[in-house]
Length: 205
Image (cartoon, rainbow, N blue to C red):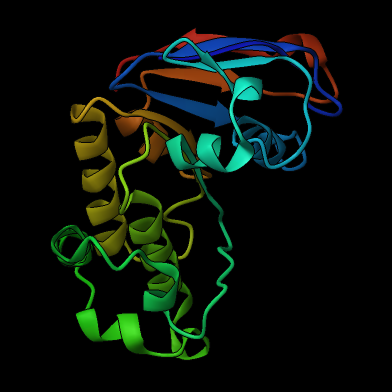
């Protein structure tokens, strides 16, 4: 379980919520409400006072890189630190890599193509492969289907469902309300103009 207590993200009231194993929490709010800032704070990418606990272990009690291996942030516009996607992936997991690539209907040849020659949708799906390859406990997904057509988005949703069936926690930001209806077990509503409206609402996917 991911448990958050009085997390202080700029412009928002202290946030407290839980994401049980195998469930998805949707983060909702207008543009600029702080959705991406919240995901980055959970991943320990930006400083944010408060308690973030995974399976009884505090965020602040382990090195940041170790925390991020367990709590993985997948940005809406992913960064790449190698000329090709393969250069950003571990070499020791070829079978898992092949399964993930196939599940998202990607051509394996894309792994060795320059990132600059990939479409936005290809980069987005390959970033999801990169996020999942070493099986983190928590997935923080920021608009994971924002650049995808309906068919590719459906494959991503199916992969997210599989992650939940495998017991992982998912925190999802998406502009697609229908997608949130399909995936979310609960919602966290953020509002900078009316901070008291940061509340968690249960729902049924």
